[in-house]
Length: 133
Image (cartoon, one colour):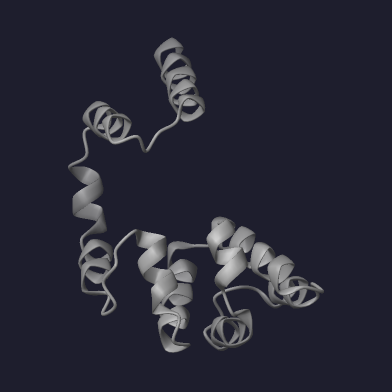
């Protein structure tokens, strides 16, 4: 999130989102009312968190259309300027998700240092809550 807040050039991205009706007029007005680029970007990122998957796809499309593909690469952790791997992942997302074994995923992410202690604790608490229900 911080990376986007610092590096994103929002003006044309917001126009693209508006033209494609990715976010409501009220949300876009709120985002555009911010006084700094950082606060504009922060509001945009927050809005996208609550938006639909389609909103996010349009956002990624907007980044590409505004010569900000490097941010897409950083978002997905892929240094591939043509976005080929991102398209493959997006197009096969449901297959990928249906084949994930949560325990193996957690172990793999933990082994790679992706999950910090706080996140692991939250996962453990969530599993405990689920087990009680």
